Image (tube, rainbow, N blue to C red; front, side):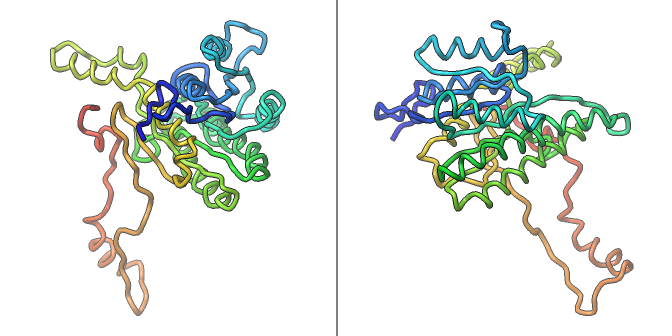
Length: 312
């Protein structure tokens, strides 16, 4: 079977998400927008969530809806905040009221409040946690009851290599994104009995940040051009595939998508172990355990230290 997600079919003429309903948060722009468009092209009805003025026809969510309906799709706007539990319950209720069911949740809504740690305020931290981590919990928890009762459902959560590996000035974002990994795994474990799946995507998607990268030499300009190829629609391909019935055995995983590369990311497992029959003291830990384990210590890596090659 050849998957042609961009065209909206499975290679046999059937759209992969036909008859399904998806709630995509933060879907007015960027990655969320592309996921909403691609899932709609594959037959899903979409609740397009993006915080904004509900009656503003020019709000990002309404623009996405116009794109979906112009090609024969079906979508409805939701302008609630994922950080407010009651508003996420309204999102789920809206899907049931408008489309009669809910099958897919994509937790994509996000924000940034980057600041070096010793200058980060409590508000900087709380705002990012509220949208990314608490928001992912809120939407997932409200949808979980529906998924449990119908004994099916799929969650796709957006994490980041900032949380999986590291980055400077992003303590709030790193904590939230690594927390989402734990949340996803917990959902996968707790809801497997109800045929509910939960996975994470760590996306590389280039945007206006490209313009801030120095590009004066031919080599630098070529590198920037390669980075511009990391478009959001390439994230949408994997999100759509995860939501398809053909991925029914894929759950509890973390995928990184970088241009045309897809990586399965590792999860924490023991690397090495030390044992002393008489037990440990602080001194023997310092003299024996730490020196023996030190060759396996992780460095203070950032994402750029691990992904050292240009996207392909």
